[in-house]
Length: 131
Image (cartoon, rainbow, N blue to C red):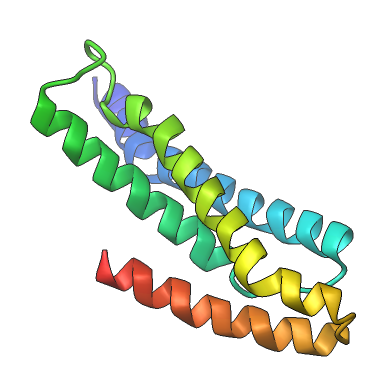
């Protein structure tokens, strides 16, 4: 029985958190690679976009829990996840239309786009902290 308890403790406190953290890092790296490959500039707001999306999912989860929505034994966040993704995608598209479109039309140098993405990063960071 001690071996089984040790195995469960190892899974709960090492393997599962390490897998979740590794998946988060892989998603972030994959997103940055895709953004750099498509847009040809490093978007510093990528991590803050992920954090803002997580905040939207948390808000939807709280709202759905307050309404009494649940998915049986599964977490309510599974219901909230598509809504958080949709709101985050709409926010990113709005940011692209409002901020980046101007600089693309001006054919700005890549270094200017990087600096602009830092400004967007600070705004998203502030919005995430406000949430």
